[in-house]
Image (tube, rainbow, N blue to C red):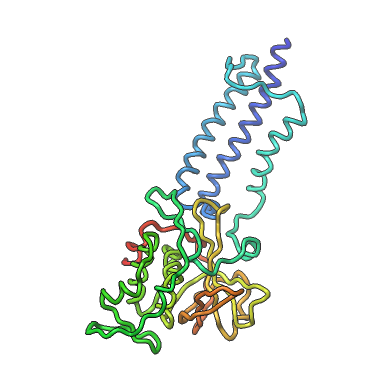
Length: 330
């Protein structure tokens, strides 16, 4: 009789574990179906989470089978698990650590990170000083150094090649001149140097979300070469108290693995009526690149000529791109 009672008592643990595992599996399925999984996981990691939901479902089915066997007084003979604690407090704490985040997931709304998180983490206005994920297996972090004096504005060079005009500056575009302007001081800067040379030839630099960080890093690293260049980018509005009425930041969250490592990056915008654009509004900004400073740091800014309100994109975050040159040439 005691054996049957013990088995039935254990069956309740199995039943509860079954419900928890099914809860997590179902939550992942719901996030996938509603396209909300992207708010928490980078695209390259989603396949692993989806596989995990299947694994959780299989384990839940096995736990349910064990629960029924134990309730019928025929527990599965297995010496591979630790007996459940008889302490109600210990069991409550143990299961609570799993139930509380699960309830939070189901009860709280699924929303993208916003200005509130930026205020906690701080906006990064210098992409070239940050660490970027860049390796063949997507596991190596790339540290990009700050521009050196060798990237200072070069004197106009005579050339028979075709030239582009940005503002009042005539910019030569021969291969030799471009390599001199976008000299990479180390191997980590080589890709940004190549990106810079491609951007330099464009009439308008469109900061595509697919290579958002790579473009901003290249501009920041060689910013003196882009002064006066026309640029277009999208993002959400962020503002700090010490900014003037003509300033705000257009930002995006860069995610490498999941929302826990999300880092906000942005560009300072200068516009006479900047105060008319509230925080978290999504905008498309068109303007020209200029030198600037903020909180004692040298940055590049955008002197906006046009700002348009847009709808929040389905995928609000940006992610590392391991083939930026290919994306840029498309």
